[in-house]
Image (cartoon, rainbow, N blue to C red; front, side, top):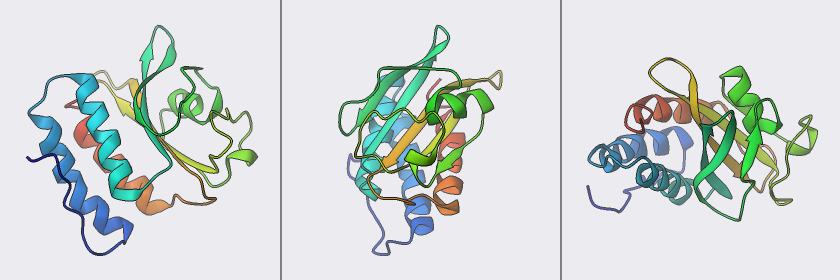
Length: 162
């Protein structure tokens, strides 16, 4: 696949996810490097949706460690159960936050971040191995279409990122 996304004319989130997921899968399926694949997934999502920040954290030595991302500088390490990312890791589930200031224990890597979605990726043993973190600079940016689309993406790419 060429390193260019083909996006639908429609800006309907569900249609954008349906269009980009197979493209992302094709983009990373021929590459074996974990970091390169995470970088391309982050770049593709930011390009497709214009998100403020898109990136990955990997579980390493009992904490989340910053991986490839697109956007402003970010928190480097996050403990389990801390902030939105650490809570998603702890609960092994997607978390959608309409207003990060209202989330108990939110870690403000950037004061411009207003809403967030975090989706866990699992290893072959069913444990959280990494998470996808996406921030918006607008309140309430993420909805059920994002949750469904990103979970579908993660189920397809988590196999390719291991």
